[in-house]
Length: 261
Image (cartoon, rainbow, N blue to C red; front, side, top):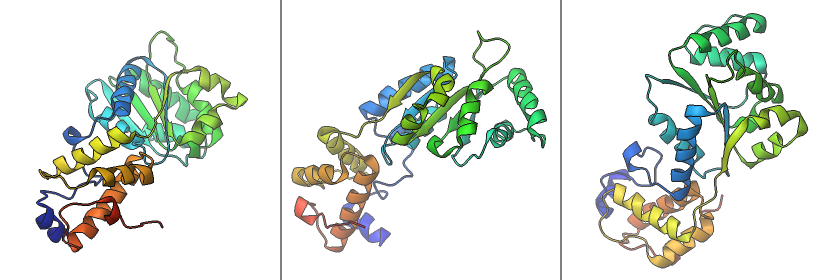
């Protein structure tokens, strides 16, 4: 089926997938704005916050930001949610720095602080799906940015997650951590015009020269997706598969079959 789709539309690759190369990423206004925030924050901030709905591009933006880091100056560490406590977080950080952690937290924490202070590269820690991290671990982040020299920023944490992460951090027991977050951004979905440009860009990356989605189709895709990039990808991909089977060269709004799960 893949070859049928490629041949029918003249694609060089299947569009609207997750495997797009860095230089082919569509730079939405949100991506550009957030990338600038990350660039500034990685240089000078202890903790940053990036939130947004599922599928709005948080992982893409983080991947884009980390890909541009000078690895002679920075050591990126990517950790996902489901961290059960401070001890597990500290040990995960040490492993991210290629250091086998001591078994006990009492020894692991001094080892962590020594490793960061002695490192020639500043750790940049992405805590993805941070709303799933145990509250004890989140609260401990503030202490993990405290070094003898407060004037020097030695480590940066980037908390990313769904909208409920912001709600969680609003509780009073996170006051100290929240005080460390000077840079934060909540991603908004794309508007109609940007969604249409996103669709066109996806086709251009696949080397499709001719128009494929009509204006009414783009309008309908925007309505169904609410401007969420992942949903746009899903709807467009399903329409392309159906269009190849039905041998359509132009996809209209009436060709967008219901794909409700």
